[in-house]
Image 1 (cartoon, rainbow, N blue to C red):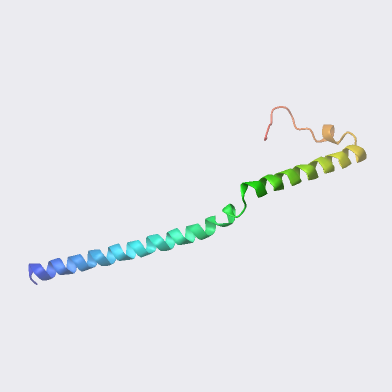
Image 2: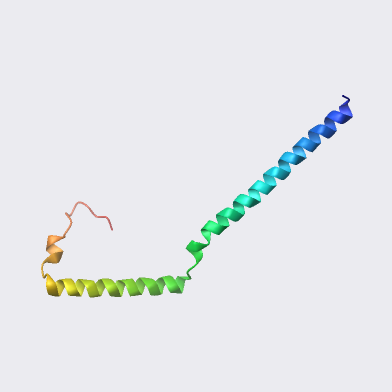
Length: 85
């Protein structure tokens, strides 16, 4: 085998590997973009509206609990050393 055939074989192997690498890179990029899409599905205004709605629900539930079980906050109070919020 001459030098010319060796260089041609080497170049074809390298080009095949580079082509395969590029195809895999874009396939992986497309797959990750597909998984990232659901998290960006909501706009900031929609998320703010959802947060307001949830806060209203929490306030309503706390009001119900205050009326039904007046000392529920003291019963469920966490020790002062553990703050998770």
